[in-house]
Image (tube, rainbow, N blue to C red; front, side):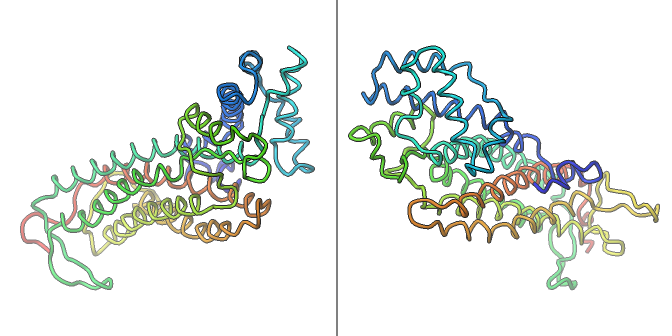
Length: 360
């Protein structure tokens, strides 16, 4: 997220989602990097790329490794990424326990393998959260529909009064897309929770003839899908995922926009608990949560074109487009997590939609 909104006490908390943001913390990234390197050495010894006993000793030596973060930061202006410094530190760490161990670290891999797989692990964890939150939101919407079953309200087309409808008709337009987004997520997960393993130019030549077997063993170790080949410059998966993130926040933004219009004085089609106060007008009860859903939807919609720009990776690796993904995708994921949590809070705050009986 933007540092202003993430850390400034006048803004922080409005758009944040601690559970999703934690997946991209330094601690989480270090954990993912080490999980990859341990699994890689285990897989390499399993398929015969390195000696099995050497692999076991190396894995044992790696188990307690913690990178020196300031050293990684100092390498960033030169290397453009933290992996070369991380691997140097890891090799030095295991080297203290045996001169032959360093050669069993990072076999056949490249920086992009480590970073992309780390992102896949974060996406997998986030998807578990999204799936749970979407299910919770759908349950809340279904409960709202049941509670408002005998209520009627005025339908509005092009923001003008149209014909009376059941309140449940409007709620149905909120819940149906949420169900579809949940179904889409279930189908999308195998396409984005992917191992990355290609080596320096993406063809696994540094680990041949065991390259494909190594990738299969590595994917199994990490609990990720094993693609037929590396996807170093095939970025349709991240772009597709970003599209889903934007579609989810857009779905929730529509709910928020409807609520903002329904609570207008003079319309009064909806009542809710809570609401924000005004610094100048004590009589106001601002629909803050609903407004935030609109804001998050528009933010993600604005970020989506950048992920589509990042589809254009040149040749066998791009520095510029790859780095752009690091800036955009975690922010979109954090916004989506925040929107899902806020949406349930908003729905549970509603006490009335429309009026009983035939009232319009």
